[in-house]
Image (cartoon, rainbow over all chains, first blue to last red; front, top):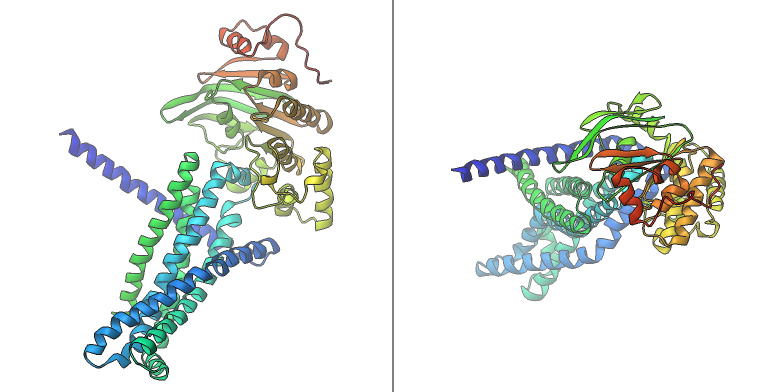
Length: 262
Length: 255
């Protein structure tokens, strides 16, 4: 009879821990948002520019490849089905609407969570282990202002830009498949894409990208700060940051779509 | 200056500090020694509220720091400089930027004045030619000295040293010892040093306090410490080949 009681206690403590961690992460986010009033100080500007470079420019190569192939796969799969009904001319709208509404911000979120989010968690985790965070606190430098705020601002600014870049490349990738594999002219593909994609799709997609940027910054920084157990702990924090970011991006992506389209 | 009143701390079910009380007076250099896991670093972290006690009070200049708000705590922390065991330098910043960080964050000094003060501290610690290097390019001893330069850049009243000589060769260790003594002599800084290097402790301390199983088993001057009747202290002295015969010669000028 001890086993169910033990399990219930374990489950209860896990739920409490989850609530505690979520509260802690929300407090950290709130404080970082308050510190955005320092965005234009010389030191913050420099750090934000560095983080924007890391988030944006250094991620361009992988985003380019993923976006192109996402558009190509979408076009090919949809186009093959549409061709059965002689409607392959509609692949432009299928690719554009899918990319702008969902796949653009979603793929960008996953790539940035895996590359930038993991790097943030690893860096802050290493700083915890090597007492650099403690040193900041002793020097009365708030880590949320010094570390979290610049990363949050950089991700919030760069995510929509990267999502638009992903959308454009995805649509172009679809055009390549449409013209070379499905016999749809570029003009027809583009006309169809422009006809069905609305401003609302673009705004909702950009909104998602901003939300995903906030999620990645919050989860990655928080997991970094929670690091313990030395180098092993840094590895665990990095893994947790990526997994939690993926899950939250998926769930929030669905919720935002439901909010705006149903 | 620093007062611990019946401090108890339990970590992972183990009582690391068990109702310990002591005081560090102005201008003193108190060295806390003990075996690994004796609670030396935990004691140090309580002084700057990086840890909170489970029971008891820590007072800095008569002010209990346990319930202070963020602003008041920051004011208390400005009295301290801390040299961490790993030096805790920010890896992406150059030596100069690391040392200048507290000035840039807490003062409105212009860049010229900051550069001048940083150069002064680096010169004091024989680091003049390392300003543009990064922590990864420095040896362990140099990193500790950069950490020390950063710790004293705001002219603290109290310096805390966490294992300042661990992982260093004997020559560099004695150099760091000299620097700690110089800090007290030239800047009048009150110091608390955590170490398990008794040679270092006896050389730099005006008082030595030994922690064992959560208790203070000895709190005495270096001379009294090496003549202590306490069995734990005697075993600790013998483990580092320090005997009671004759006066302890430090080679350092305490004045």
